[in-house]
Length: 323
Image (cartoon, rainbow, N blue to C red; front, top):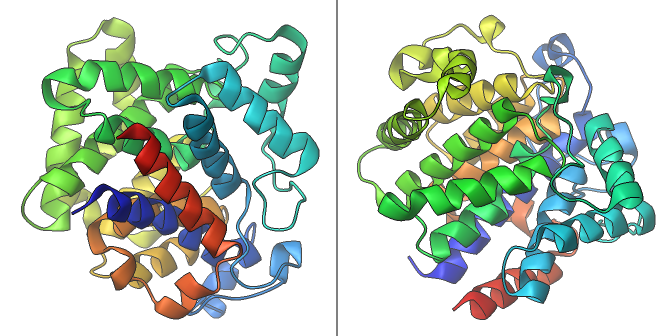
């Protein structure tokens, strides 16, 4: 698969999932059980037309723009892009930033005051929302394109941890983003079914982290439920949480991917879990997009994405600049 297709598959996987969940964000699972989402909707939670994305995609697109401008990862520049998004509505469908998490707000404010990208992210247990996992796809694709995998994966994980730490600087959030990268690499380079690749990616990720110090070992306990993907896939739906906690999000992602066989089935399953619908579908949708491709997405969903041509242009630019 060529690099442009990989970027398009991953990014539109995120953005389409985000847009699918946007109109019903914050609605409880009971509502979704009685009125399941079956297609791209409009208006709803934020009174926006079909194909509108939220903060998940805006922050990911800001990262791509920063990579293009800097020809690489520049933490200060990324934070400045986040600030432009927050204050001026850059990287949004209609020039208005919305649906911004508290941890992200505090990180941007802290960076504005202190200017240090290494200390602006939250470090408490309460800062383990899903706000860095939801936007980590561009950094994963950057590391993949640069060949930072296998024996070079340590450099990739350091970058991914640093970019996560811009807003979510707790080790638990960083590990979730790191595991996501191992899955990305396995989906793109591995063999077997999607479940096989999820398992192999997680196996490699856990093996990487288990060589770290005792603090990492303590944090890995939070990920216990996803060590065995096939077993976890049998977990009843009512035991899958879909709020804003990063552990809930990565669990819901693995559960939806392992229990579906198409992009639309996966993302609809994620949305119909309720609560943080846009983010769960964006995180799961990014991985599903890499596996099934844009050709495997409902074309009506893809075509209604706001500013679609601009997003495609960013993907083309980032691939070219990194060659």
